[in-house]
Length: 289
Ligand code: SF4
Image (cartoon, rainbow, N blue to C red; front, side):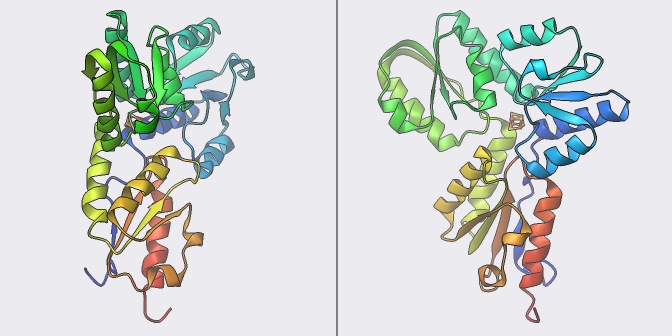
């Protein structure tokens, strides 16, 4: 511990993942190039501060294609990706489209597509209804199911041939625990660990650092699934874990006594929010405050 960091470590992988970073840079570049309006199909990220800042620049999240009224604008597909059927609808609009699907999500599309065409069912370990998962289901030839964890997996009927994949932000333990159950239920199975490398790195780093910490602060939207998952993972490693959206939720009682504090954040948390939290924590740990 140095006096400068006050026993506070920020996870190097905290904050936007490469896929989200790329999608945000893409819309900002379009806006800077004078494209107007820039529509995104759904919010680029589950973070209000970011979506408000984009909105102020005329970058609008829409829920349905009908809301893309000005056809001289550009439509951006976000990092989560979409189904092939939806892709066709988008193409039929007759407006400029920029596909910002994360290449690592595209990889999952290809894995699902490959085995689905060979007659495999697809089992996705993930959050039903999450945009990425909805997109993945589109590649399963109508033979896809989603489970959140082992409890739901246990209730599934037997399979002839099944390809087990993961939402890219899934927890590895959950994925492998589900895979073990499905293996018992299937004559033929494939275990395709499609959790993306940035997520794996984040999970490993979190595990290693959280177990050394006396307090973990997880920064991110209360509605962000990946932040909630990260907070859960931390709770297995460290007795005291707090999940905050911004520095305003931190008080001196929380952070003065713990010797080592580890700050991490979900993939949808902007770096400036993480920095603000770290600054406040270090400030509150000063004796004189
Ligand atoms: S979590 Fe992984 S796969 Fe998903 S957008 Fe980010 S980098 Fe891409």
